[in-house]
Image 1 (cartoon, rainbow, N blue to C red):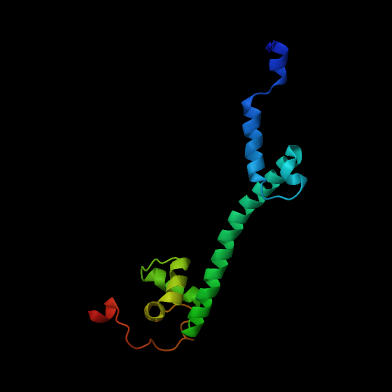
Image 2 (image 1 turned 120 degrees about the vertical axis):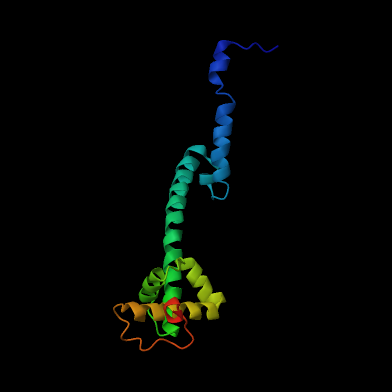
Length: 149
C-alpha cells in the first residue's frame, strides 16, 4: 500500500518539469555527446544555438540582398549600363520593381530585362541624369509616352 504524504509530493516536481526538459532535449537531439543527454549542459548549448539561428536569419537577408545586387550589376554590365543609374531611372519612370524581381528577370527573362534596360536608358537620357553622357544615344525600339504626343 502506497501512502501519499505531503513530503513525497514535495519531492516530485510534477509533469511540468518533464515537458520543459523534453522541449530542450528535442532541440538538442542533433547534438553530440553530453550536450545531447545532460540537461544542464543541453540548456546552454540549445540557448546558444537559438542565438545563432536568430543572427543567421538577419545575415541571410543581407546575403540575399548582396547576391541580387551582384547579379543585377552583372546583367546591367552586359547592356552597357550601371545598376544604380538603371534603378534611379526606373523609379523616375514609375516602374517600382525590387531587387529580387529585377534579378529574377535578368536570369529567367533576359528579353524583358533588356526592354527594362532600354526604358531606363531612354528615361535617363531624357532627364539628363549624371553618367548618361557615357551611355551614348538611346537604343532603337524604345517608345515612351513623350514620343507619342
